[in-house]
Length: 68
Image 1: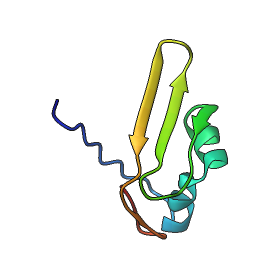
Image 2: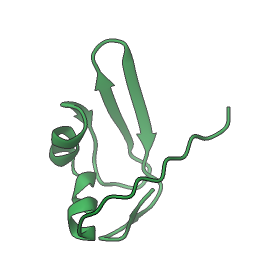
Image 3: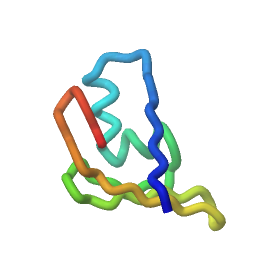
Image 4: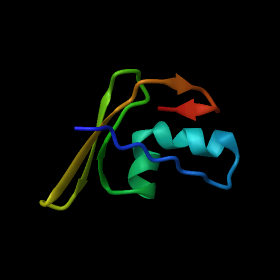
């Protein structure tokens, strides 16, 4: 299966965007059912009810610059 890559441009300071790597801030921004840690190779989980469960691996963290 090919990778799906989304480039999201957010009009905000880099510090505020990078803060979304923290579970509490991610769950307030996207879905309350979030399990995440700002760690390389961590597999973050995002649940939207019983039907949709998404997992994303964190492969790169450059503080206040990039999250991959």
